Image (cartoon, rainbow, N blue to C red; front, side, top):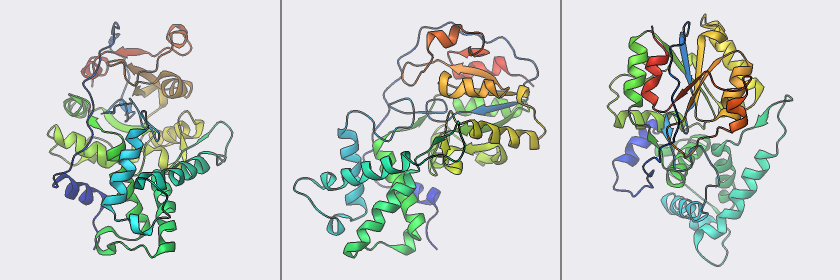
Length: 318
């Protein structure tokens, strides 16, 4: 039986590989607003930039400088022995693949969403499945016993590639915060831009902070929604409305939910428009998106402002 994505991630972690790392955070000068919000029974988290730190403050398919993309492609080509089955060009291996990568990402990004007000999400696993299928033109082969079918293999390639493209680490203290909310009876879930491998990255980040219980005990699976599941990304209306349907099925109304993110315009404002309460996490400069005009406007400003993720336990109580 082939390895699951989580098992594959464990196997990678056991190898002596060099991975990129996230730099220490640069603090933000801001005054917290942490007065308790009565009636909150659930917290919906964003992931990249909120629960998980990245060098760019969010998920990015083309981070700067471009050399990061070049290195990630080069490592992926060698890790999965793709070089002999590629249509080669003069120069290093990444030069022969970077054009394909850009082409498939751009093609998926231009696909029209089904509903007005939605924005197409790019599934990195689909990108790599298309690249891999092209390799088969030149008799490419991989270990199916270890990696599974083409879809499962593409998931693992996408995970390896992204781990080399963008470092991730759990925000300091986040596991303790989630445990305290859980002990207080607060339901927790996710509505976030994310890939198939995002939950594995989050799991591994929390394990590094000492996670000792199954992740579903802290994050309710029925209230966890990633953009890749619907093929649309924030600020898509349908993403938030579907999340609300999940909440309603769990007996929760929108005004009983606090959505937490470091992005105001594309994340917290749409959540607020659907009736959720909002908290802006402004604890580091990287990834923080909080235009002054939206902060000042009563129709868009967040209900609370956190300068440390632990402050949410003051905002939300049992």
